[in-house]
Image (cartoon, rainbow, N blue to C red):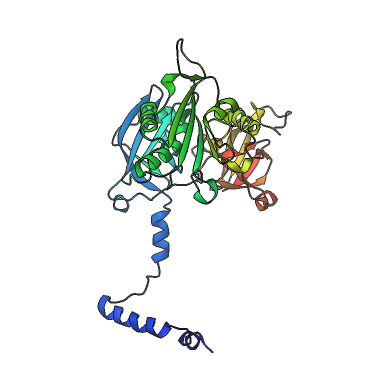
Length: 390
């Protein structure tokens, strides 16, 4: 029996065929184009999007929010949808270096004509000073489509949410909070936002107003270096502080976004409260400032040493031990595909043909990649001369 004979025995199949013939006479050819799926996927998950800066807002003395809108000629001004909490990779060229960094989308998903990203100056940073000091309205850039899984998942996270932010780690939470407030969702959100001084608080007035107007959203600003006479919460985000404000700790899901040192401190505090690891979600924080302080670092290797990397059998470049393979490539004018720059997405997957690198255990690399010598260049540090292919 062939497939057609089998389908004729399925109840309702004949009626469906007759109905299709009627629709064809009315609407014409109903067949799906061969490239329909491919074009639809490209629309939702483009590799690159050309955008221009249409607005810049000063948030703090060290922070700005950039509103990025698509170029009309690029996909007819279309930006893919995203989930509140996701990020994009913003690519820029500085001299002969093309590089990119991941920035959480700070605007909510229902504002569809643009993405807003908030950039804070990083001391000793490379891209953030350029964006803050040199970028002006009308400048054009390339960004990636939205990515990441740091968002609310109703099936596993529930509706009681505790957000713990440090510094510019507030940006994904601003997107989620705006969505909840603007759309009237029933989530119960408690935000703890740690900053060094009151002047460092990003979105302070906006978040305060939302907290005042919506009983299901509470924002607590915690200042570690308060000025004399400051009346708000001070110190660090401790187990005691959390317990004071969160009624149902066991029924809450905790989201962490900020510097790596904050993660280590807060996770210990959450352990004191009996919060299990499966109830904690962390956004990737990127490579540490000092890789030699990472557990497992070989103490016999000086982070000041320099090796060489043979790239694709064509070019030899210098590589500093204290910098990632990706950074060494970029310093030499070579660009490697990237997205998260935090050792998670695997877009920068690179094969090591010879030599040795260090990658912390927290780098999310497939077991098969370990077997066959693949690394994530964004989080791999040379421990010898290398030969790689990407």
